[in-house]
Length: 328
Image 1 (cartoon, rainbow, N blue to C red):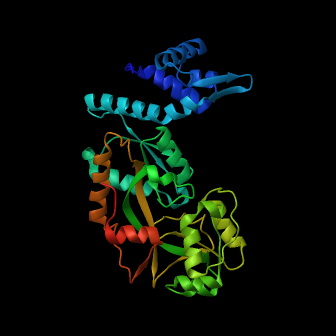
Image 2 (cartoon, rainbow, N blue to C red):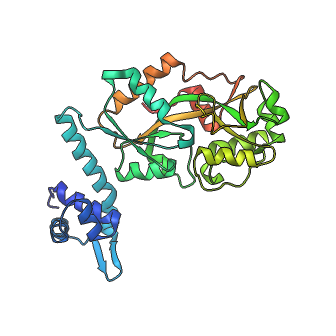
Image 3 (tube, one colour):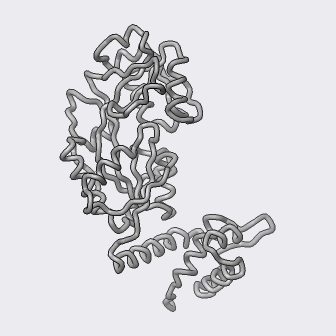
């Protein structure tokens, strides 16, 4: 079989059309004319001696050969970008997508990068909807690293990802200041069975809260659209015996949290696990420096302290915290 020297410009054009399923949108994203884009695709198909797309009156779809070529094509583009970055000294910023916005993930990112100072890589932060969304972006090569809570997904999409636990953060219960339980200096998670847990979003997107509610018998309302922290706390105030969970170090604006108090949870103390996540087969240049920045900050700030008799973690987080089974 004759070897084919792939032209990465043609491969990039193919990936753009495959993801957009539109020649016009793909051409716009690459700053090309449709004619120029079509020529690149045609040359790639000629080199591969196969059709990658079927053009129909309703749009564009991948052929079977195109579907098989898509993931290796993404890998080839990532390898090409890594090679360029290696020559340039890795100067391109790492795209870091964060999720879990109500818990303010950027607090931890800022601390880690500030502590590393000149040793930290350049980072360009973007918003991720949730772990499934960031996993898809990592698979498509649209982002380099994710930061949020890592957990198993129903479709197994997390299997292509590597991750490292970087912070375990205690959570408090937030409830109405005039509730009898609000007078306590501490509460046990089991006491939340007397309350109603108000989630910030649809329950299916809230792995941590769902596992907490199941473990401690806390009844949970149906989720609504995630409209931000103000909306969540307003729902807590409006719900009889309502409460929610928030990180203990999360700063709350006095106006936003008016009429509410945060009470520490003990025996056990629930911990929220933050992780860095990346594509197992396509780690971006600069990732080792980013991991070192978080590890150094974690050591000095004791971010990874966990005592099984004192603290509570969902099972997957607990296993990682206990055994250190983290990706290198």
